[in-house]
Image (tube, rainbow, N blue to C red; front, side, top):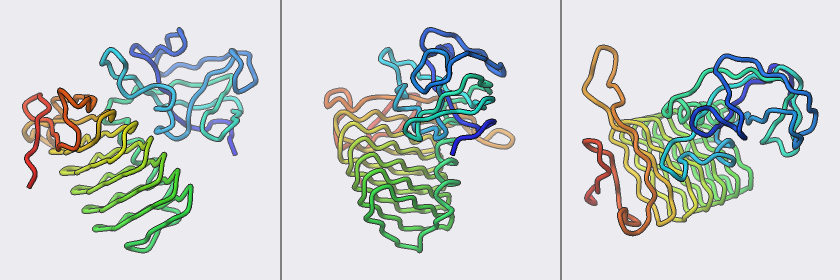
Length: 266
């Protein structure tokens, strides 16, 4: 059930522009509409992953879409439980790319941990919600629309259904998906993500991340500099499409020295 002061996420074209309107951070906007599809409302999603259904992670010109947190001031309405509308909304602050991926991971973890599976649990039902906070978890799902969140190190996650949303924040994760239309985000270091079907979006924004995917997959990788003070700064983020020419299918890629490079099979 949606309520006033509900928090969520909103996506934009570069410059915080949505449907021709430029928004500003930390600002309240009031309109006069009341329906989910009318012009006098502002739309948002509670699940940050769902914003990617309306704005791609990477625009056709290669620029990143932009994302902010939001708060619904008036009571929101929804037709499908994924896209919400409210007449009064507060735009929060813009999330950096890594911040957006972390928000996706955190959302799935918080949502799915309520029904934590046993180790090596496999769920075959559609719409499964699986959460794990322990290290070395083994999680499998074969149903469509699965939501899987993991915060432990060394997780092994597999999904074969369509429309999976998978988030992992632990180091050393191994994530595999053979379904279509998956959205996969990993913020831990040394993650390896492989997908077997096209029309997926994959973001691996920890240190030394690797992605292997078929033609038609959009991939994002991050690179970090040397340790400074309390951490290693992110020095480069790049997105690319596996097109079968510049970037080959079923080949491991990582980001090194600002360039997308192949990683030899071990």
